[in-house]
Length: 478
Image (cartoon, rainbow, N blue to C red; front, side):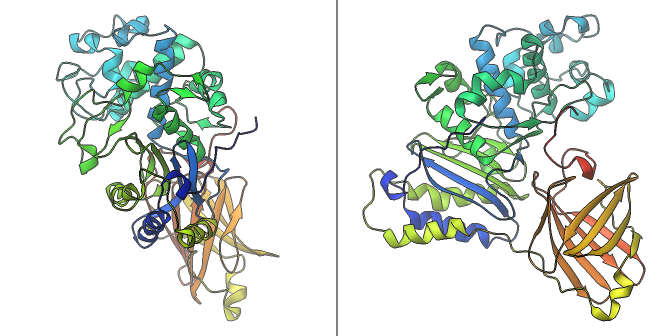
């Protein structure tokens, strides 16, 4: 389907100070531990600023990590409105085949509203223990873990709880989350293709794994800001929006960071200002009802609190009450800045002519520096071509070729979308940065001609244990 563009406006017409957005970009781009990938700002329902840092692009899906939870929550709100599920039903009631196995009274007392608000009664995330208890059905594994507290009394950020919630939706609807949401949410919002990682049985994860564009994040935030109405059509019950975006459970001390201490709703975090959907490494859907603003970001950073601090410091004061006059110079500068956003490529020189024969068709083996998520990365091969070089990473017997040139980013779409930069740092060393463009993640690879060895490490460790050939949005059945 064709995606309808969001209404657009100049920042000044919507009371947004372009100088504040420029200050935010300055801070963002000069903070070494934050790599921005995209930004969209909506004010009064109008897109007033948007940009993508090349080689990332507007139409490319991005792994959203736990913003997936906010889409799952939205599916719950729709399903409750349709009478398919009820918040005060026990979770076990949707899985009668487990009735004989689940004997713990707290597990049996766990309600839909408890798993929707991270209040299952567990003290920590149960994902790995649940998988250990049942490799084939994560819901059964989760319900077999007795909560040490009564459900509804304590907060714990728990992936298994959200998976149970998504499994309920998929069971009662008889559809995947994507198929259920397509006519009820995605198509009405004008959201194009999305893709979701699945478990062994083919159920979409719900708690993570959604790949979608930044535009999809912004539209979801705007729907909630509108109270569940989109272009005059009610897509979500008004009461659900109110309940999902207010504290359902306190979470002081449960997680680090000032903006992770303000309470938790139905898969939305409360912030110092407004509320938000979060995804690891800087994927944000920030909704500011008092300012009538939605901010969507994608990024690659461990330091998500600093990114939020920049929003509060620079963007929040930029949202005025009235349309602005003057400031044309700042608006022109902002438009030019947003149109030219780009990540700095890794520094590297062309192949040394005096060692060209040695580097051509060179093969490398691990030097003990391979990161833990790549235990099967056994070889790297290098070969020259007409328009650059091909680096072939072999993992578990599967080759993954990526290309790079002599300057800037070289983008390859198949078999996995990547952008590679870098080159030779000296006659014996090749160092490249491999960006997996449908995820937040970069792989740094260094090859040494002296020992014919390589080292590889993730800049931020992917949270899904996927082979390199699957570091992209899923295509078709997995």
